[in-house]
Image (cartoon, rainbow, N blue to C red; front, side, top):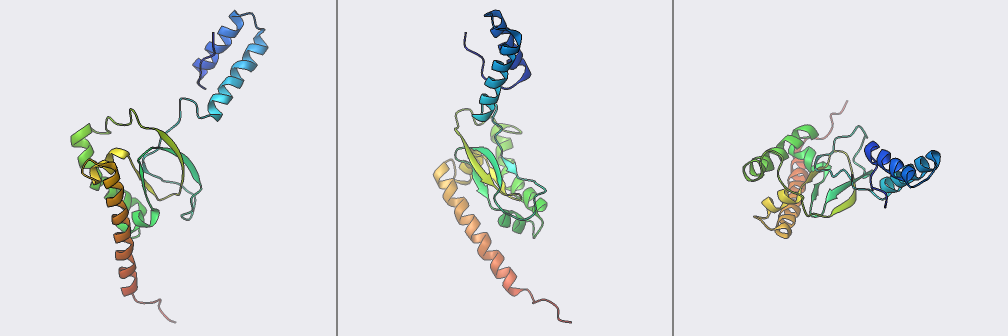
Length: 177
């Protein structure tokens, strides 16, 4: 019988038991089961954690260095936009984005949504301070169309950057001693 795929303790124990029932010595069964779990983990296994929402991290700066998985069709709002929505406060920016999309998902899908059943999972590298919108949130932005949602969000990011540049240009320079 083929070994079960996965890295949980239950899966590993089940594989050890199955291997021992086929006549393998205990140490060999343990080694094979642990190797199968490592391979499952290395290939992503069935337990890939998929992220959405705010990327909160203690890593300073806004450099892409966090490898994660998201659902295909997700949209990453850049950290400068998130911070700008919160007037320089990233946590306030997260709340602003949640207010933009939260009420739509609650009314359509319940509190956290009933989504992601048939979406592919893709690896991405993100930065702290960014916010990942689910494909369903992107569709909301595009009135039900994923491609339109991406176009709307791209335009939103560009307009927010322009607004921020204009605001910064109006500020006085640093105080002189």
